[in-house]
Length: 264
Image 1 (cartoon, rainbow, N blue to C red):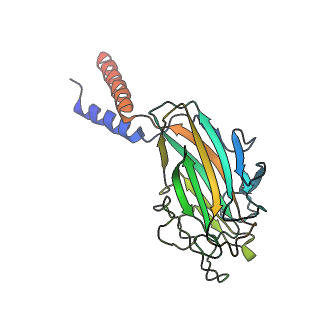
Image 2: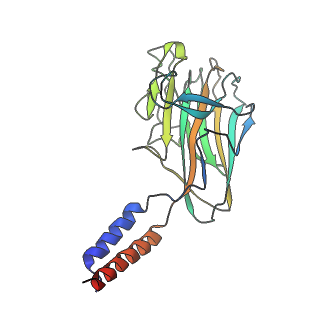
Image 3: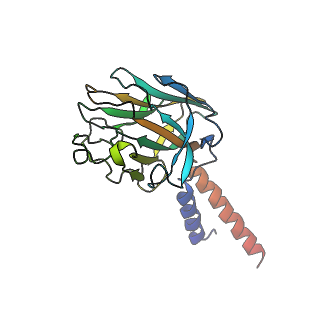
C-alpha cells in the first residue's frame, strides 16, 4: 500500500509547484533587440535605452537596457495614444498563460489630475484590458502645487475610476524624486515580486495580440511632452495544470518507493 505520508508529500510538492511556470514561449530583456515589438498611434519607431533598475537615480550604477523612452518629446493630446504592440505565437488554445514585465514611468506624469492629465495607461490582450489605470510621479500638491493623485495600487490596477491614492505609496517597486521632475521615475513590477499583480489570460487561439498604451484625458492643460515610459523583461509563460503536476509528482514518489522496497 502506498504510504499516506508519501501521498501527502507528493500532493504538497505538486501544489507547491503548481504556480511555477514552464519555459517562456516569449522572453525579451531588450539587451540585444526589440524583436517582435512595433509602435502604433502617435509613436515614432521604437528605440532602446539604458535606464536604472533601482531607486538610485538616473545615474545609478544599476542599469538595464529598456524599450524606451517611449513617448518622450511626443506631444500629448486627448485624441492620441502611444501604443506598443507585440503578437505572441505558439500558444495552445485553452491553456492559461502569465505575462510578466517591468514598467518605468518617467518625469511629470500627473495621474488623475483633471487639468494636468489625465495620464492614463493600459495593458490589453486581444482587446481585453488587464491593467487600466493612471500613474503619477512625485508628491504632487506638496512639491509643485498640482493635485495629481494616481489611481494605481497593487490591489487596484484595472479600474480607471477607482479611488485616488498618493503617488509613491509603495505600490511601485522602486521610485526616485529629482529636481524639477527631471529625475522623477517609478518602477512597477507585474507578475513578479511580492504583492504585485499577476496578469493571466487563457489562450483562445495559437496567437495573442498584446498592447501597452499611454493616453490622455481631461483638458490636458499642463500635460507635457517630457513624460515617458519604458518596458523591460517582458515574458509570456504557460501555467502548468495542477492535476498534471499531481500525477507527475505522485508517479515520481511511487517510483521512489518501489525502488526503496527493492533495495531492502
